[in-house]
Image (cartoon, rainbow, N blue to C red; front, side, top):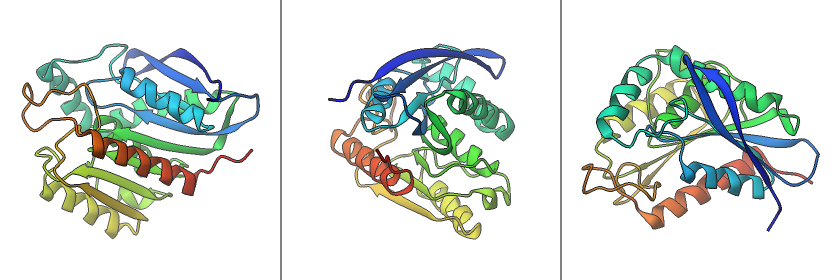
Length: 241
């Protein structure tokens, strides 16, 4: 296994002190980089492990924070924080841009070769960066099929991959259709993968669907979604020695 190094990074965003997690591949050369966004509950060991896995593949990876170092395990608290955020694209973009600035200024990062990958709210952040015209090589969003302000998807400059569970009541068929219609109308290079039988947050091992209806882990599809994201990165943001 490749030796990687990791550290936490503090930076301001949305009036909070965010605590992100940076994972660096072995070596000293510049590498392509991935901005990694968490579910609405916030940054956890799940995203930290994903950042580690990306660093092992040769990427600089920054798993960014949403809630100033907090993990919002209580669904009501999480919704109270995330729903206003998702309704305000400028705030969402601000959170993403602050993390992107940290990633870009990391000496190991090739600032012209960055992708954004996100889950749930983190996926919405990735999409809003694209709608803001940020120079990204790829965008991937799982469960975060959020539509944007009219016409702004035309600013997306890279392929967009989206994944969703077929039984996700939050990202229901009408939401999926609105998202894909937005992407198609803007002539975005997009694709959508629907994972049969999967619920919301199917990729996240710690979720408990007995506590939150419509939410549940699907280990087989979680692995497939990860493989699909890695394949997207290999296509759009290949690591070259």
